[in-house]
Length: 480
Image 1 (tube, rainbow, N blue to C red):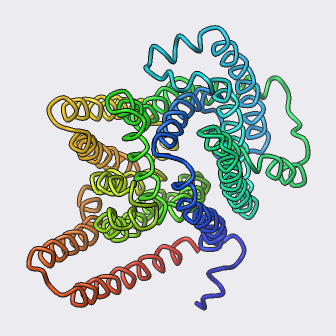
Image 2: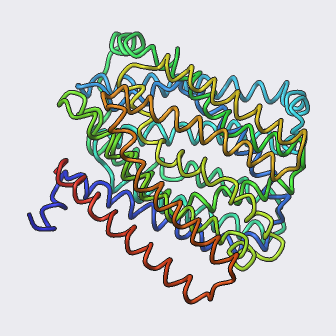
């Protein structure tokens, strides 16, 4: 089969390439703006941005009670449209409640959570929640309709508009307001493009009240189980910046958030692309009987894709941060090293987490999320109590990585993958990671010539790329 056939209409490679291309351009622009932003805004400003994002992301799962995630599942467009309308109604209603809450109790709630620094910007939080929730909802329908080009374009426009807004407002002296407004624009940009594309494709939804009532009951597991699961999951991801802010202040929070963001960027654009395509394909694969293979190979591809670059970047992180972002940011590179296990495993797990919804295992997902949140917070508090900020972050990352691995095992097993199949996919990435770490540490300890180290790393790169191409070809051929 020629390479051209892999890119035919409807092929998984073409879909992934379109979304990945848009995300690559978007993430590339984000990386280019970071050296500028790090010299306009201080670590304290990025710390305030981090807790603003944390609060926003914790509230987002409540905005539509997660009904929007069910849009890709129905066989009929009528039910999908009904879900879109239902999610929109809930979204607007919850936005109004949130606005009233911040008007009358905003200062009290933020002070109670030791987030007083957000009080001047409290009215931006409901706006960010509404915009992000609306965009996510519309993207789910666009995924159902395979409008991957539209999604890719919105990712690019979001990145460019967010970056330029942050730079312009920062140069005008609006610190940290420029970061907050730019982030909101980056989260909500592209809504109009998606709406117009859906309207041209489907027209106005033609549904009845009975359709909305039917999907309200049929997909009730999403608000009953998936919503609390998502809140707990988001809380698990976002509570750490809030705790760091409470224990160590805005500067340390800024170091942590920037290190986390930059460590994710190199591989995240492909991961997000595969994840969006996976959700649409998995809904079909369940009925075709090959969901187990799709889930296993998607996870394997993402794990092997992210393993080597993540470890390599983390090893060089302090030097990279100091050169690219400026000397004051060198400490952020140390935090990046601590985040290796959690970032890598979360990156690979994120797309296949949808299998809990697809297989109607929301109760299991909820239990795993509660354990995930509790243990991460506990280990962070242990590190913070007995050691310093770096140790606390390391404790949190290691415990979080172990729990993500456990969640991954359940996500793969509920799609009928065996224990031996699951274990087998970890052999190559673990071997490559260990070899890279051992080689780098040994070379550093023995003070080996830098040219020799570079040669060894190039050999590892060759092995990594060759393996990745083989795996990608197998993945494409099966789903072609």
